[in-house]
Image (cartoon, rainbow, N blue to C red):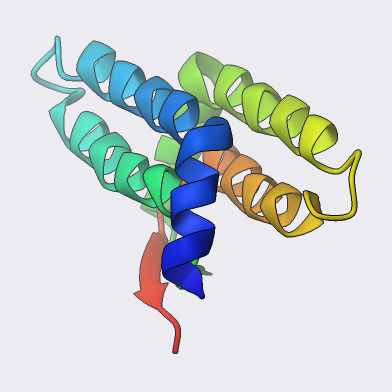
Length: 122
């Protein structure tokens, strides 16, 4: 079922969401200091392309909090707003509610991505 969900998701918003994560990753990789942050963006772009069958687990440390604050100011708010708008549009129909839930998962991830780990669910 997650394969079908990921296929439909990719067509109706996953491509655009994943490309925004890739664009953020490219912009962060311009500087040497931003390369670790850019690489993290590319990992989350994969999640944005196909979120069904995957979950996000958060582990918070002091260093992650500092990087998350910098991330939030520079890139997090625009990405989160894009996912929230997508969730609002998807939630209009009953069929779109599971897709809206995935978009909300990605919006939360866009706000605080560092310290997050992608795990596969059964």
